[in-house]
Length: 234
Length: 286
Image (tube, rainbow over all chains, first blue to last red; front, side, top):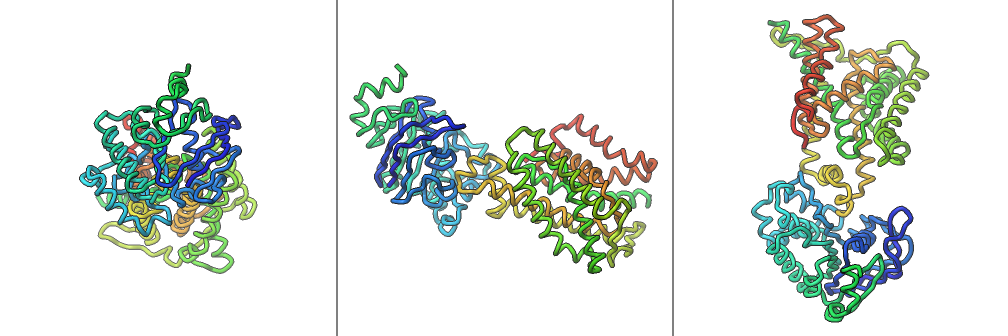
């Protein structure tokens, strides 16, 4: 579904990512691991098109999308749930969900998808008219995922969904992700939380200083000494 | 007693127009973080467009809106695209300098084209008066106030309940997140700037009947607009309309009860006093 080949990307002419090659098969839940500053967020932003690729190719469903605008990528179903949630704090939950589906391909199915999201995340349903800024971190993460789902994702990319959440919320969020995956959604899970990601993802990549250090089935990645090294920075 | 009623009515009518002038500035600020110091000069540009159309085709200012509105929106879009966009994101002072430059450009352009004497573009309704009990009001000012409030309400509904309105608010609250929703942030900013200048075309047409125009008046409109926007809390549109009324009423009370010149100073004095105690504006910013 997604093939990234020899990708270089970064800010101000300096590459953060060097020669990153990643493949995501349709229907898989793929993990992207790495310590802080390993380039995980840069990678996901390059897929979303908000950070330009310097060289390399990004192919999504057979189409070269390397130079497409962020809007065009959203319309193709490449949806990011950003780090830190980035919900719109002065808007209600309903408005946040509406914004998720405001691009022109999502609009016809928007209200139906909002109903589905509210069924999946009943906590949001009770608070539809509440401002997103007044929600707890866990509720905001639910909203950010819900907002992404309204957009009609083919590939859902979650950037650090567990960041700063209480353990019971982390568990709940991962159950939701697992459920979406079982229903057939392709998911790219970018996480710092090693064990949690290895438990849910079938295939993982480990980034270290902008390069893919380890890749493989999660059981193999777990036992590879380089994984630990990438984390501890030894 | 009738004197104070007259002053209040007059201030209310003038103030609602100030509010509308400020809505355009507040809208642009909320989406792009740009304070446009050429704001008042664009009002003058709109007024002179009315004047030109009145002299050439004898068009009533109210009718010429249909020409000046799209023209000014195009001008606004072009100014944003070619001048502001390339330096947006740079230091705030650079953007301010740029808009000051545009201000001088427009002002002197008008001076070159129309000369330094006062001009008027009369309307059919110009000399019509309404008597409401002891209060006499000029019909063009009533039209202007009614239009200002309708536009404010329209804008409120647009921002609250439409996709384009939600996109504008999303860009205001978090431009990066908005881009991730598939919103074309650059396009939203350009359209908002164009709409902000377009609002001035309407404001200009409403001001023209009964207001003689001179190229140097732009700065005064910019100053009044700025204090209304700041008083209103920059991005709170209800606050901005309210602030417009406060300034308008204090100006008219000042001119009646103090001398002419002192009266014109009163709004600024009130502005300073309010800012001392409520630096965040009259209403909390939303």
